[in-house]
Amino acid sequence: MSSFFGLNPDTQGIVQRAGERPVAAIDPIRQGKGIKYERLVPFAAGNLLEVNIHIIEPGGSKTDNISNQGEAVGLLLEGQIELSVDGISHTGNAGNSFFFKAHLPTKYRNTGESIARLVWINTPQVH
Image 1 (cartoon, one colour):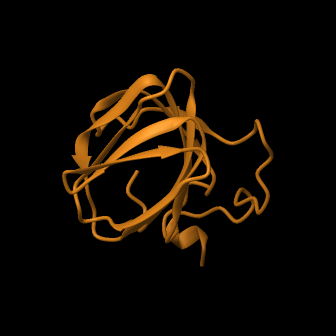
Image 2 (cartoon, rainbow, N blue to C red; image 1 turned 90 degrees about the vertical axis):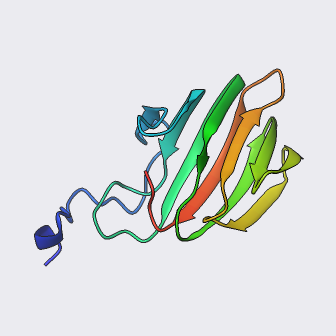
Image 3 (cartoon, rainbow, N blue to C red; image 1 turned 180 degrees about the vertical axis):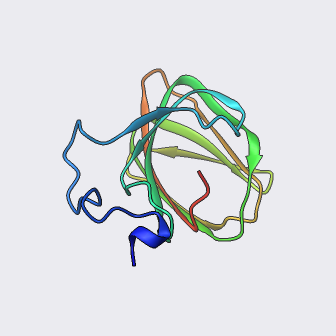
């Protein structure tokens, strides 16, 4: 049944080791610079969650107003960011978290002098 939906159960690892997870450059359908995604949920059709570590270089940003019909939650692991949700800016440091309804337009940028790492969880998948 899983192969019918494009899934290969042999490649759907329950555990993904550090350094072995796929890392991709910025999403080609989004605007921005200096961002990579480290994928925490394996690519698969039918997954409800999308979880990535956004690795944001100093000065890196998502400049398009990202939105979808779902929810988003995040935890800033290290660094500093400015997150704009529905036109309201919020600054964050390591340890800060956020939650919002994902239909609200969203963008962010690294305001610090070092790499920011941000765990970002979407439902449904958007990338």
